[in-house]
Amino acid sequence: MDDRSPGVLPFEEISPWVRAPEDPTGPLTGDLRADVVVIGAGYTGLSTALSLRAQGADVVVLEQGFAGSGASGRNAGHVAPTIGKDIPSLLRFFGSERAAKLVRFADAAVAYAEEVIRKHEIDCEYEPNGTVFAGVHPKHEARLRSAAESAAGLGAHVRFLSEGEMRERTLPAAFRCGVLEERGGILHPGRYVLGLRRAALAAGARLYEGSALSELTAGPRVTARTDGGTVTADFAVLATNAYTPASGWKPRLVAPLRVSLFETEPLYESQRDELGWSGREGIYTAHEILESYRLTVRHTLVGGSKVVRYAWGSGLAAGYDPAAFRAIEAAFRERFPFLRGLRVARFWGGWIGLTPDFLPALGVGGSHRNVLFGVGYAGHGVPQATLMGAMLAERIQGREHEAEAALQRRLFSWPPEPLRWAAAKLVEGALTALDRRTDRQIGAM
Image (cartoon, rainbow, N blue to C red; front, side):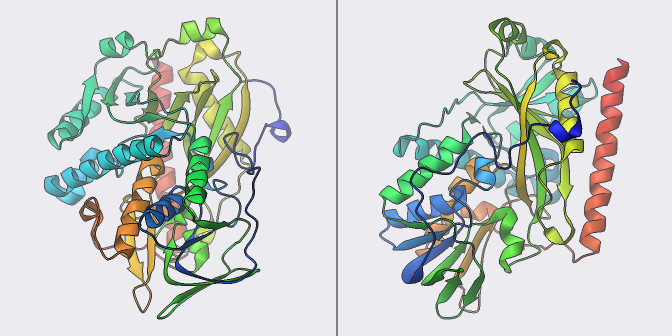
């Protein structure tokens, strides 16, 4: 690691993927009437608006910042057919029949996101190269081989990669074996969400940026209030994910967890040659709190996770986190020792929404059953939030999307404080300790 002090770590408040749009829509002023009011202009909200407009509904979208300024513009851009914590956990908690439905849901989410990219001609640097869940220690081989067999048995398009096969694919040597998810790939998340924004506006959705929700009240109709005005509608959609607790609705359904990321400076051609990685697959490690890595078309390397933060009361944990930044940079240096001279250009982060069972949640609330929500993607929101928008639109039209059955279950809430804080810290501490032990074992090899 280099000799930078904590005070000069390069930090971006949102991310390098997005900037405020050149054509801001401006905040809501006055009182409006609509068929549906959507709260949040990320993947879920914009996908919902697009799907509703295709069916002729009058839609207003309220966004507290600008479209994509939340997690949709902050993530690493992995489009993976991953669902839940892992396949063994799905089998243990839900059984094989339900687990197979969830696997099909994850595949359907990737396929739907790809369809949206094609249909709306979104230039988001999408590369359908798959994803590798990589083992970094010999003990990971048996677990990953078993997981691959279980996933394939459920219908997932996966296969185990031995160490020899990893080298044949020119994947970096630190990754010893892996499970290849053949569907999905990587994209530029900022261009994707701004492409959804352009498509939604072109379709006739009314978007108001800089319009934070101050209150949502439900009755025969719902009313969404901001500082500048109100929207009265037949239905409301909470497309707020990790921001949901602040809405006042379902405050304990999701726990917001802060995840940090980094991007390096561009690699020299000689560094790219030494790196290999010709398939450009996205990589997740087999840690309990995973590490993620991917390449960009700018020849930079993006990585992160490793450390998650929970704030008391399901608030949004602070963004500038030197300890987390140093931890993810240290992991990067350990996985790619031959890139030691490559500097990290910037750190940033965002908040994922986590439900108690690690699965997305689609539901309906309000005394007149006209407040819908789609949240809780556990870090896999690029494809799943896109599909969630189509599912929410179908619900509003009185139909059930074919993919919805996989998510139907009793929804549990996180416990109240201080139990929630204690549980979060206990789990975080235990998982971190397991990962540190693994990393120490790697260092001793």
